[in-house]
Image (cartoon, rainbow, N blue to C red; front, side):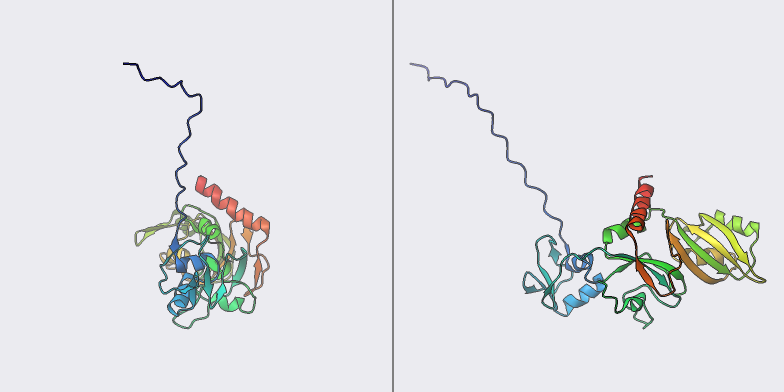
Length: 269
């Protein structure tokens, strides 16, 4: 029997396998996407959804956690389509008596009252100052930038001027620097120095590189010291300067970059 005829070897290059499909675009909850687009806080967005004011691809959405692909799904509020807003970064000189929330169930004034009539889109506070505290508060609609600055491992310096109800001595300043344990948290300052004193009280400059809740007030209370005033004057290299109380201004490009670089450097370190 004749052998089957052998085909000559092919000199063509093998056809490569098709590339594997790329990973699916991340999908996030509808309320979160609206917030990240800078249209409203997540709480406000969830309220709009509950009121039937939000549509996705022309259909009314009812679930704030509805998975959304922000790159292709069309989102509208009251018929007006929303998209990513221009990134805005600003500082506000917060007066005492205002809370840093979008709304307050107890009817207290919020920092957003100071932005009314400005024409600004919705902005989120970058960190917080409690009602009794004053000074530099950053706000932005760039959630990625804000997250880098407030990340626990950022260790971005925050400088405060604090008026206390007694006259400090070297031992007290050393004790504040050494810190205390309070409710399972270590509270300490990065640095502290006396700025000036009167007959019965004094001003301290305190620098923190972490963001514990009410950290300065809790630390001083451990030494039976009351805080008369607490003013944040700087975050990193960005200073409050001469900005009037209750006023705001946008950050310049150098300030935005300085905070970004400082946070990136500390996280790498």
